[in-house]
Image 1 (cartoon, rainbow, N blue to C red):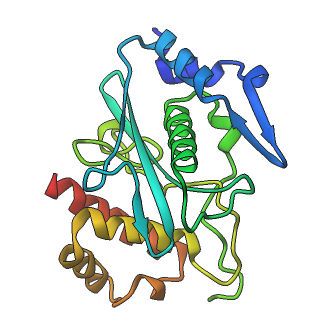
Image 2 (image 1 turned 90 degrees about the vertical axis):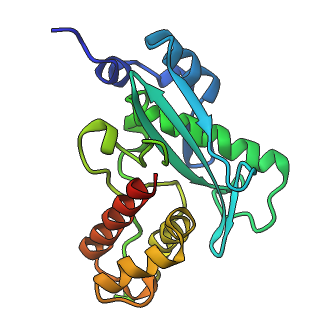
Length: 218
């Protein structure tokens, strides 16, 4: 049986190309692109634009998105614009936006296998006090890959008492599907605001419903 590109990339030893910044580990974006093109010379990527801009501003901060296509499967990664300490930048400059695009590209490539283990363990923040269009998807394999995607991830530090990451994702989905469809999905699940959704299982169900709306709109 022919080995899949995902399996080939996942097994690739990337240890010599990992960059360290404080306690955070990153895979070199230049190496990631090189390894990807060697595995699939026809692989492509796209910087998603919002109203002509390579970033989108939300109530939670600025975000960028990069979609990578390998063997006809397109997977996208949404990434917040962060500083060197992985904190949200309120007024990012061009360099910070470009750096976040490179990080999003590297993580989108990771969804196809390369260096994926580096990001294992990332998830939605735990609420301790109870408190891609055109066929693209968000992390991991989605509509084009034959399974439903889980919620996107990022290296944003966990924040206790807030559904911080979930609310970021909801802001992006609102822009993608429009306010009417957005609030319709919330209403179908018995909510008026996304901040009312506390349980992870419910968050996931609402997110999947948003994706279905996005795919219908596409």
